[in-house]
Amino acid sequence: MARQRSIFSLLLVLLATFLISCGGPSVTVAPPTYTAIQLERIQEYVPKIQAVRDRAAELKTLIKKQDWIDVSNFIHGPMTEARSSMTYIIPNLLPSTQPVARQKTRDLLNHLVKIDQAAGQSDTQLALSSYQEAMEDIDKFFQLLPDTNPEA
Image 1 (cartoon, helix red, strand yellow):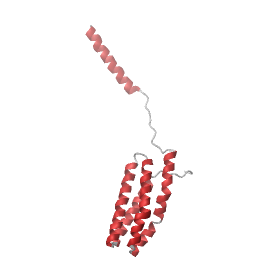
Image 2 (cartoon, one colour; image 1 turned 30 degrees about the vertical axis):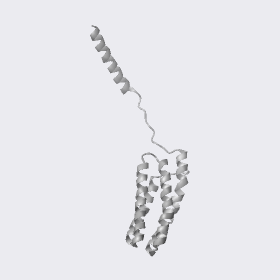
Image 3 (cartoon, one colour; image 1 turned 90 degrees about the horizontal axis):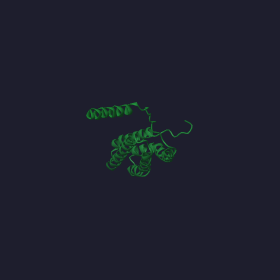
Image 4 (spheres, one colour; image 1 turned 90 degrees about the vertical axis):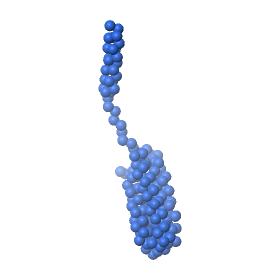
């Protein structure tokens, strides 16, 4: 009889554990959002990247003119600063967005290296195609950023 009580008690414990684990109210988790500090840090660097993106036509003109020294200066100056600003933004993005942003930053670096190599070889076509890909990397990076416009 004592043995049956212990088996019966074990069954009741298992049943209670099962019911408790299944019967609780469902908790909905809010989607991750940006804090005011993150938005402020992102907004600090966006104008620097946008300024370089707005000047991108200068780089294209330099490539077409085959002014390779100025092409190299532009890549190692403003474009590198824009890439650094992108790198500073990444830790302030949502965790799900960070890997994609890191990849876009790496892609930008690779395309800038290709432009620099093309400048060293006086290869206008390679420089122009790499320039186009670099601009696409910057544009795709901008698409990952939150809307920091206060009116929205």
